[in-house]
Length: 336
Image 1 (cartoon, one colour):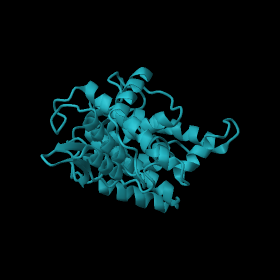
Image 2 (cartoon, rainbow, N blue to C red; image 1 turned 45 degrees about the vertical axis):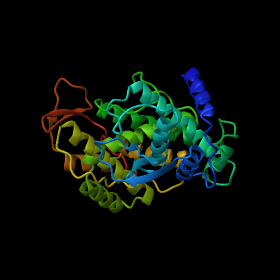
Image 3 (spheres, rainbow, N blue to C red; image 1 turned 45 degrees about the horizontal axis):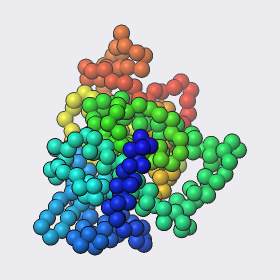
Image 4 (tube, helix red, strand yellow; image 1 turned 180 degrees about the vertical axis):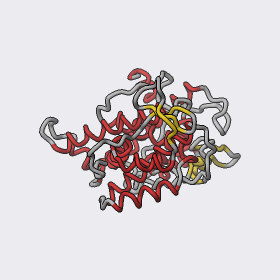
């Protein structure tokens, strides 16, 4: 993997990609790359269904366009644009819908997008901001810093969410930086945290047609009745929506309107730690909150336990479903 990244980094340097201009956004960088190539390159946000790739590279006679799903969170949007930009820089062949692209080519483009992202945030990290705070936090020695321990806890919950989505949708092929089978690996450092967040967003996008606004609204009301704070309310609502959507998809229920109630990421797209913390809160609620379990019981009818299955498996609408949230006797509803 390290040798592949080094070779790919050399190819990107040989392509003479201009440095990202201020204000260090992916849209401004694409425009600068288009000017350097002598061919206009624009990013356009359009509504793409979950059955389509999150980004498309469209080549016209006079210009190139990167179409990106307007419903993507900010961080996933940046990665998607850079993925399509990597196809352009590396001169990959294939149709606009990625239908005939080799998985190895997609993995190479995803790895190149990771390298381009590091180049994009490098100048921004020298300025004062959220990412600058992350750079300062890395200077502290581990072992005594509360922020360091908080990051480890968030990374653990983040990994649990990744495993849950992977096991809940084994038929979904998430674009990764390798063609090998995905395995859960302890998150160590910014690079692995970034990859985990990106792959979680990829899975959530696939799940989007089964996410119900009614479930989200019901879970929000339930959490507010227990007087949780705003962050905990959002975590419970998002976790309940994802948990019910996983079960509905597993039982082959038809998808609804492709309009997910899950809120878009509002913070700086370069602040990976903030997004990791938000997803970690949702993951904890998904696995531990009795409020989420109550919403599952309300929206997904549980017929009976499976006699010869693991204790965490139930029958939902005639099919076994892995339990993602369990009500614990005596546990506080604020355990989110």
